[in-house]
Image (cartoon, rainbow, N blue to C red; front, side, top):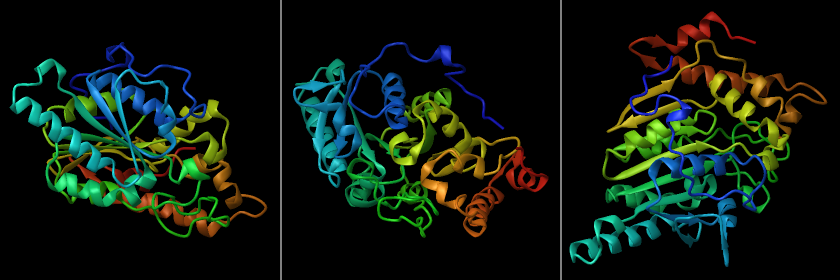
Length: 320
């Protein structure tokens, strides 16, 4: 099931202007970089990016930058506080008639899962509580990718990181629901594989003033261990297996913007990635694989829409 798109109906409808130059020093196949490019195209050029220390910091290292927009670098824990300062300064200038409307800027926080799920959660919570008018994009590669791929609160069950060599024992923190509990006007999950879904959500979010929070799956060839050319295929499998639900919450009301007609087995998503290889060789870890699949199945059994019951699809079987 796919919800009707109101504004962007196909790839040809996406904006053509680019605000992110090619040839950045980021890793080949970075899903977070593709998401930022697509989101920036849809928001437009009048943006100041507030970057929490992380992988994306390499986009703007003095004196070079891949960005056409403005850029502010902060510590991992203070990006939302930086966004507050910029937004307040812009609003003061507007109130004093010192800032023409055409020179006002959208404020976009750009942060990885380490800053988002862990160190920056306090300042982000405060910004949402104050109903700060800003965008927040988390590129979630499910570990502290910039410092050696250590476990974060976003690391999924069974995944190998630099600090969990036998596989992560925890389940992933549900940051979507933590954000939603703050009652912002808009929260969404996105994935660069479905660029039209991403752009449509940016368009819908732009209709709201206040915190607009986007959680993006950021496939990571370096940390996850796969050939960069497989990035889009793995992102697609994350969606088709149900590992990465595409959804949004508008004023707290959740809807899924895409539900697979027939879910693929989760291990099709896990097998191409080196971080899950220990679950298959030298011996197959059936207990962990079943736990991962069961967690995904349990999520979708709880998903109800007027036109589709995901649990019925799972009960009917999975495609291979």
